[in-house]
Length: 233
Length: 233
DNA sequence: CTGCATCCGCCTCGATACTG
DNA sequence: CAGTATCGAGGCGGATGCAG
Image 1: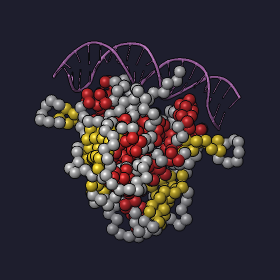
Image 2 (image 1 turned 90 degrees about the vertical axis):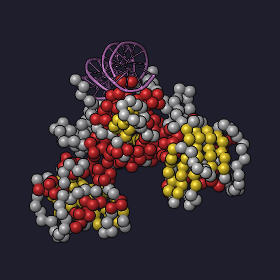
Image 3 (image 1 turned 60 degrees about the horizontal axis):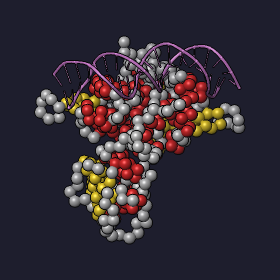
């Protein structure tokens, strides 16, 4: 008899936690926020998660209508899991939790897992629409093998996968450095000086990019101009 | 050796879940969102939570700076737990999760716990600032022994504890009915007809109240007028 | 009586092995 | 590749004890 453990409270929060409150569940949702993912992809990105647990969680989420199975290309083989519209509604909440948790990321320990594609969600979580500049432009990020960019257009900023067309700024770094900067444990300046971050493009664009991400540049930002290729990652 | 279980991921979401992702933790936070609470108060509102668990969770949250101890009146005795500013930042996330979870509240089962003060948070979660009317007024709610109101002023709606001064509408009901209405499992009209909800005040105010809460009235709402005291709870 | 700490049975979790 | 089966370890839930 498999009697699932619930809070048994007649309340929206308790009901929500009965669905996505168990261990690993929201991290599985995070993986699906980047688009459909295969069983083995999820497993590879979540070290420590047992295969039985993932199977059970996915089955449960499908049952509750948060996740559904899709076949990515053609018919038959190549199944993948994706968020339903209900699951997609978790996006602002997961991003908000991620932003809140930035406060608690500590020193990088050797046993910690880091994935470059998390940087995409980190950027999406950090975007502050109230600090968007009136300049329409793109800022491209190359975090290890992942490429994505911020597109500013008409006073709105959005995170987009893939390369930008003609980015006003390109940032190259590794996943660990990226998270450390996002958590405020490292300024872009220090990261550049220590060779972990390389910036190309207009200095003003860099400042505007940091601004929309709520980052301290770590530099006075008085002089405009071109950033010389000081550091290569 | 108590080696706390963590996700060991260098990521904001994983760090957040390492702090508030364990069982019961967010429900404890919910209790503190209503104001400082005593150890025994929390325990009484969370049936099934073991005493050791609550002590451990609180100690951990204090350690991480999410919760702190305060003495409510005078010095010495009568300690209570309250959210720190960091913990307070969880409010929109917890409310968002509560709103998301409304989708999943099912039929009320006899073993389910319901607390009238949860209604206050439910209202706060349901408020839709984009649907605030231009009429400055208050809507009072009496859910079992709990009294609170929505104050609309200058295009902003907020949930406030306590009675309103001269409410444009007063709703009396019990906690279970309140949650059922909030979850869309019951319309205010049906609740009234079955005697579980009593409304007093201007009919137009009732409609505006339902509107700002994103509720279907369940009535055509064409004729304005006074609601007769049809049902008493 | 409140605010915990200790103990114990059980269930979930995490790792490995195995199968279609 | 996508799971299922199994099993040891540990977190959880309930009862009880105890100090202020």
